[in-house]
Image (cartoon, rainbow, N blue to C red; front, side):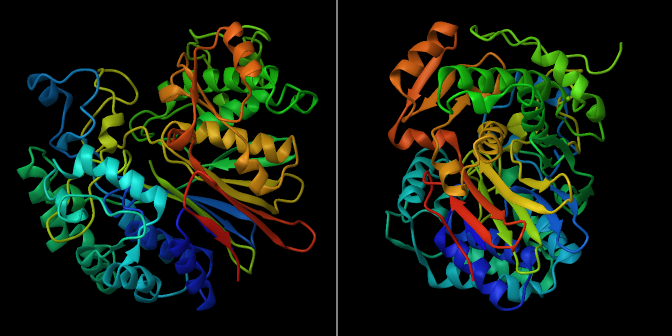
Length: 523
């Protein structure tokens, strides 16, 4: 089974499964096809993270496919140039090394079985022959053309004579086909050294940035120990920092002490508890989530049940708290998500992103992909764990998730919700729907959501259409600043995919978010 935000990407993943590939192979085929069909969110100019569940050993591994800041980019340089607080969102200084290509290759190298040439073939075909642009993608493309592509170096390469393709219009990307063919023949070395790397560096430097070919040549993915916590008989898995999956686990640990099943799912009382749990989680995550090579977080202490109990006591049942501070766990830290489960019980929970839509919108001439602006998430405050430093990975919003059954380690679900700082909030709300309310995957994704603005502990709360006015009024009385959201604005609440695996017979049950163009399908 494959679930993704674009039907043609789902078809690419299924094609690879039908050709004998496993979940890792199909995940990379899906990622590549999404680069073609949804460049508004993802691509080779961005980063990726993945969790892989091995059906035979029942072990979970975490891939960190995020890139690092240029070696020449320092706080001192930015201070001299007058930057403070955070970098402007589309500035060429926000371009970090794209980690996606190495992540794709390393996922296949570690867990896959097919050749890259076979895996990338569906995406190459889509790029060369063209594809009809899906409706919600067309809307996002139009916004990206206005905000980034029309103004960025090379950005018009991802337009049709300066405009975005319309819904149903065929779009071809020969430059991206060329890139994918180059990778299919030469692997990740062909991306990080040679013509592609030279084009990336030259384009960024011409735009005013400082990313160099040496930065690309030095890049490497890392395989890491995933982080997890227990919740209602499940073990929920996330990638460790520099990803923000920690926030979802902190929130679930806090919620575990409340009987949520005794409260109606969309009641003010239950939403209040979920929102307050996420406020506390973000207060910690926005400090402790950083590149562990520079600032390792005390993960064991943060994820302990005792620490959760301490934080839980701060929640007042009828009153919002907008001034949450990070705790002291030790004495004296836009996007596509998709999921694949194969017939052998392996699962790959995968996420790939440019960050803000097309990222910077900068396109290396002739190669058909835009470069991310992930460096916007660095702090420019000296001494902050997430402060900018050469060759450092920034705080990352993109996070995949898995859940296993605690009693035997069997796969329960491969799931995720994409969308900036919405992601850990989406993970928490989906996990509650599955574990507390026993909803099926589609119903869990259909349920209206909340989103704390920008992942700030004291942020306003966006509430999705479908949450009643009396509930909104009650939450406002509790002190939550609210923002009702409907229509196209619902993209704020993320776009998720879920695949559940039945414990007794291995039957797969999938759901795909109605806030996106995608679907879930099986062989």
